[in-house]
Length: 242
Image (cartoon, rainbow, N blue to C red; front, side, top):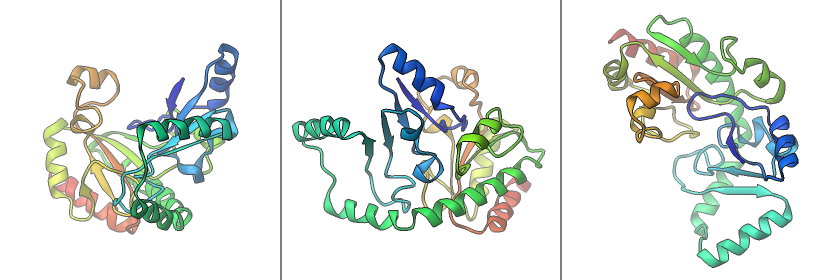
């Protein structure tokens, strides 16, 4: 069974332990994409997962200059992965490996800052009438707020909002940003804002996206290391131009 927690882009938080128990009963392996959480905020292997994957491109590297992935598991699992890599010929180049090693040295301070700033941004967004909804597990309105508070060591650097006015309002908002950048990646030192309708969920019809809880006007914020007040001011001036 393959799951992601927190999920992209709604930031739903899964309690893995009952899922892991079900997988064990049914003889299934549990694979978890923990990219959004990072090992600082959540460690799925401690909650019953068999394999954990990370897009090392994102938080682990943290500087938007590497494409890489990581697989974490028991020695026997990693040995099987290593065999496949030998057959397929996949290998990370030395420079990319060095860049990730560099990025990992600051992972703790980066994630702590992003956790803090994202919550401040989410709380501010929740007060703005231009947003129909704000998604962040630190908000009491989030459906998994209690679960997140119980199992996560940090609530993450991602925020999602639903902008009233749909795609046209989203486009105007994105054009007005002066600090945050309109780009589809995440987890780096710069704050990025993306539209899932044009990126991760572009293959779905508008109706299918709406049924999945991702209507037009849905924006995903990856909070960087900028000052929280500066980001909030940037978002406020962009809202003022709608």
